[in-house]
Image (cartoon, rainbow, N blue to C red; front, side, top):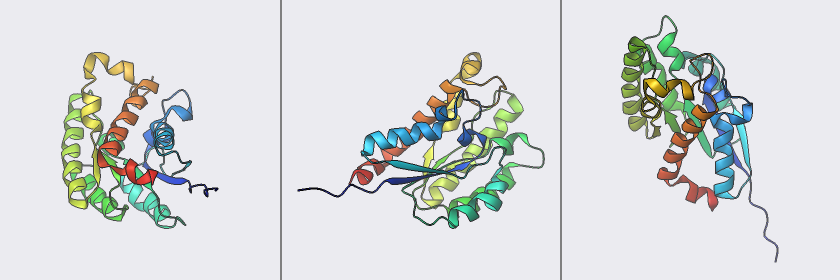
Length: 202
């Protein structure tokens, strides 16, 4: 008796240059491809990735450009991830208040139980404080909208000042291969804890 092959899974990523894998030695070493491969192995199903992220994107850009593209997709995603906020920390004209407004709109539009990262830690004190404030706002909004929080701020902060360069690309902004493995671990831990993998295997 032959069983029909199970349909592949659809993974949609939104975000900024980190979701593009900028800073890695290869596009395959970014956290999105790493996650897709882990989902494929754990579920036993092929994974098709639709990466809507844009390098340099702020939360306002996600609202303006990526949410309409998400709404226009001709399928329902099985897994959705979002990382946004790093550029809101460093680009002029963005504040925790503007970030909170934009993120509230983004999370209202994402499919239920998406995987949303808070804002990575920055070593410079003023940026570090801003990213921490924005991460607190992210956690509250993620809970309010019923999504799953990925603790990137804690993960990046735990590397500490002395080891920061080991996980960061030559631009001292983006993760390197090792850094993206840490990001993938953070997302993966949240995905596993959510119980979603059991559903994807069915």
